[in-house]
Image 1 (tube, rainbow, N blue to C red):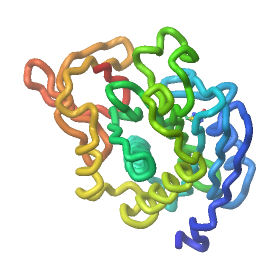
Image 2 (cartoon, rainbow, N blue to C red):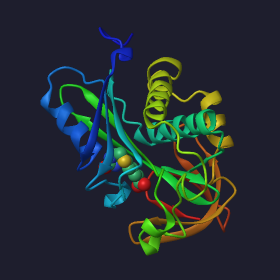
Image 3 (tube, protein in one colour):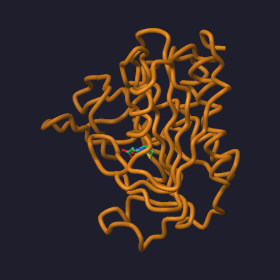
Length: 251
Ligand code: BTN
């Protein structure tokens, strides 16, 4: 239970095509007076969005969905929700498809050194504070369908020769895990060591030499930890240790 309602009563909406499931979810949340517990999924998106205002290539045959999380207090730890979503996706793909994926801080799902999926979390403040976790996983995308600049960086189930899973089963399993993380076990983003350790174990970033870009500034260092807050810890060449919450790392 969460307040007067149970999140187990989530409404699932499956669309053939839409502009962006995150945009649809934000519109739905803004148009309702009550807290929205929905999942909006689509077979394709015409203008799928990624982090930092980028486009998320979303042709037919992928998994694209958004889940809304009404929050009971003024909690704004969106970096941590992004990591929880990464963990839920990584564990689900291991359970359903038997593959070991990794979480590239802050929002990418990696397989064999390439991006298999991405997460975009956004916060909406209406009567309720609602977080939206948008998740995209590349399934049937073939190598020659990919824009050229992405072909070395991005992969898919089909490109890796992995059997395509049942999309709805993946969506439901990820949502169920995230509901548990957010509303039961982890009390709205208060990181417990257990979950942070799981995120660390699946990290594609810890131990890697990276370039960190924030606005115009680029710094080099090594990612040395992922903190309970969702921040990445970066150790610079001169030994200075910093915690970063936003910006981008290139590995
Ligand atoms: C990224 O790689 O920067 C994040 C990609 C997030 C894509 C998902 S697909 C479902 C949801 N709807 C969107 O428009 N974006 C997210």
